[in-house]
Length: 428
Image 1: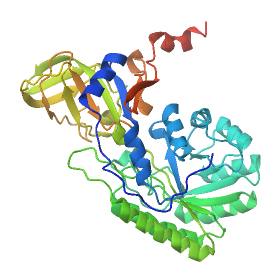
Image 2 (image 1 turned 30 degrees about the vertical axis):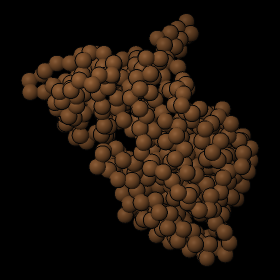
Image 3 (image 1 turned 60 degrees about the horizontal axis):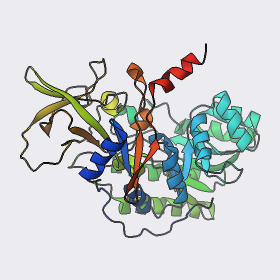
Image 4 (image 1 turned 180 degrees about the vertical axis):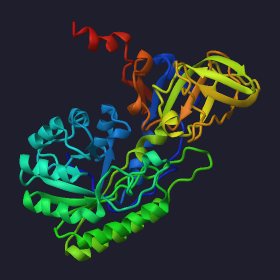
């Protein structure tokens, strides 16, 4: 695979478009509810908008469906993997594990034994997040290619749980102890490819700009002749109608200046990577569910859908906001009453509520009053949604559907109860 190296940003159309109501109704009819639906065109627009970075490396934990990985690979997007399973997903999607390909970078804070064996076998570059990773990798594979993931001492994210920098974060190598890591690189004759910084998911622009300054300073302090730097990820996306897109032009300008500073110091060209996850896929996805009950509870009006937090965990875990729309099962021109609505799911769990804030307080959304059988559609569900689903309450994983070139196709089937039981019944 040859990665696309982009040098100029093309004109890019508006990034946030929506699949039509008819397409979402068709998905529910053909594949049942709940189901995930992704817009391939939206993902393609997002990739195009990052032209100007030499390598776009997708953080597949956002959504690791093999069909999406294949689509991104065909567009020249590289990938990272944070587990043995994600390595195998990338390989199954056609990414090369050959030494020197650098299609896949393994990025973690530890090397479990299975992952260590596989990255050594394949010669995959490792983005190192702890000193012990350097020692373990160096002892198993002297001369192995590595990146250093640096915690610059500050972080930012839309939630404290998504902040990956600063002294309360487990991620990365603390900036004040890097000299010890450089000593380990020398000791084990590891090949230091580049430096990487990622401070959080949904970071604000001012904090992302600080990373540029921190990276430039660390390149000057680094005693090795590196070949690349990585801006990490964390680019925010709009979830609310009032949210605005990040100023990518300004962001590219700051990183172009950082790259120029590194090249001036090192005396040669430096590859500039970016590692988006949510940014590429987040706004592309929908969770389509069916309204199965509605009721008044004191002063609150509830609707209960057939999707639960086993499907969409982000509101329960982070207090994340997802815009919800009510879609009539059969299109009608009739005026529909609206009222403040608490949207919840079917799980035997009090916390199975989607309309909450970061403190867990219920915050109703103003929605049309549905009939039983109408659809509740959750927007902006392409990232950290299907990939965080579970089998809680012995519920199967929902199917995933891709809308591409005017057609819907299933890219993951619904997990059956037989699938769930097979892991246990097979043990006798």
